[in-house]
Every structure is written in C-alpha cells, then in structure tokens.
Amino acid sequence: MRGSVVRGSVVRGAGHVRIPASAVGITVGPREDEVDARWLMAYAAALGEHGPEYFDTTRPGGILAHPLFPVCYEWPLALDVRAKAVPDDVAVRGVHATHRLTLHRPPRAGDRLSTTATVVALERRTPGAYLVLRMETVDAAGQPVSTTEYGSLYLGVECEGAPQPAPLPKGEREHGTLSPQGRGQGEGWSVDVPIAPTLAHVYTECARIWNPIHTDRAIALGAGLPDIILHGTATLALAISQALRQQPRGAATPVRAVAARFGAMVRLPSRLVVRGQAPRPSPAGAVVRFEALAEDGRPAVRDAEIVLAP
Image (cartoon, rainbow, N blue to C red; front, top):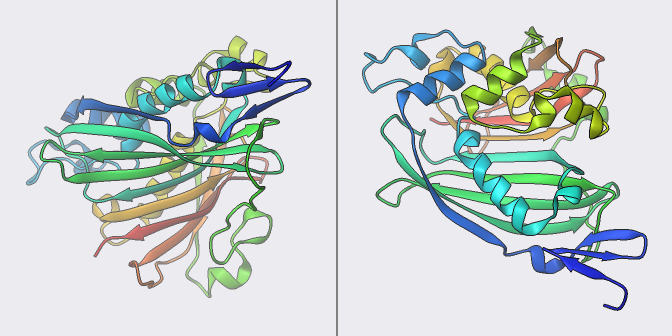
C-alpha cells in the first residue's frame, strides 16, 4: 500500500493504525510447563484462600487448583502472540475484554502441560479492534486439560472485516448488573472483598503474570492510567472464589466452565462487591451467575457465569 509501512501484523497509514485480517491464524507454541504444588498453593494464597483443599498436601487426591489457575500457564503464550501480531505501541492499547474458560479436567500437581495459542477471530467494534486468542492445553498423554478464549480490545485501532456487534450472553443485564428479575426471591448473595494495596504485586509473583501497569506506578501513569490497577484475571479469580464459597462444597465444588466480560478498573487499595445467584439448571450443568463491582459501583466483572460440573 502506497504511503504505508507494515510492521508485524499492523498496517500503518495516514492517521490510523489497523490490524489486517491476516492476523487471524497466527499460532505460537506449543509451550511446556510443569505444574507443581508450590505454584498451585502460591496462586491460591495470592487470592486469600485458606481452605485445606488448596494447601493440604496430605489430602487424598492432592491439592486442588483454583478454577482460574490456567491463566498462569497461558500468559506467556498471550505475550508471544502479541509480539507476533502487534507492535508494542499498539499492544499498550489492548485491554482484556472477555474471558471464556472450559476445564476439561482440573490441572494437578505433577502435570506436564503443553499449550498452543492461535488468533481465531478479529472483529471491528465501536471502541476498536476485538481480537480473540484461543489457548488449548493438553497433558503429557495428549488429553485436553483446558481451553480458553481470551478476548482483547485494542482501543482506537482499526481492523479489516465487517463490523460485528459485541456478543452478549443470554439474559444480558442493563448497565452490566444483574437484573432484579434475574436475582429471584431470597436467593441472591453479596460479599464485600477488601483489595489490599499490595495485592497486584503479590498476584504478579504468585501467578507468574507480569505486566508492569499492575506494579510500576510510573509505567501505569505513562500508559494513561490513573495509577496501578489490579489484573483483570485477579479480579475475576476473587469473584469466582466468592461464588464457590456460596456452594455447599465450597472450594471443592467442581467447575466445568467460566465466562465473563470485563469493565471498570479496580484501584489499589479499594474494595470489590461480589454478588450473584443460587445455581440454576441448564443443559450444560448448574449455572451460577455473578458480577463484581468496583468501589465506585461500576461493574469490573459483568455478565459472568460459572458452569458447575456434576
């Protein structure tokens, strides 16, 4: 294209930046990781868990992985894809917009996991380019462990292809909150969760997920943020923990899938209000709907669901 420079998968022209359709199909991996009890326990500890299910290594069957633990071994793949698909000055415009996880089985201490990541969708949205990365993880025997569709929104960035409306889960809530009709009578719950000023630093090291906007104030301010903010995955994991604590089996409740959209930033220190419903039957299994509100009342995690395994 005359007057344009191609760098990686981003086409630069006069006055705009766009991601071409050729970004779809970019693949990285497989990457191998060994999961050990130390990593599983560290992740649970970062979230303030204290139950023996996450820490008692004498427990029959071993300790449990928190349902969102797959983000720990998936993060390096997300960075690798970003390095191939978008340059740094475009990558800083990306925000974690959606997360959809399927747990074929929980990760376990002693697992050697292999993860591959592929860009599977690129759509035009009003705020920018919406890119979906699918991360598929198998164990040493080649059996599936987890599949995640990680959606990022690159604000102010254009992309090729017809514009697509943002898909909304069935029963979308006005303003991102659970509707009064959806809560039912006497079956809703709400919990306040304090966010310590050091939580982002602790989560970074325990999850092994490092992005300096969460721990380095100078970099966060330079990126246009008001201060360091909590990771979206940390916010979602805290909300999942509270949802599981409402179930009879607590942390031991088996989880088949998690889906959520992200919204408001979570400052440090601050607090979250996590609220949700009792499980309701669905063809996929019992579904728990929940959300997490930032201190200013705006939804940080919305349209969220956990599908419980039998």
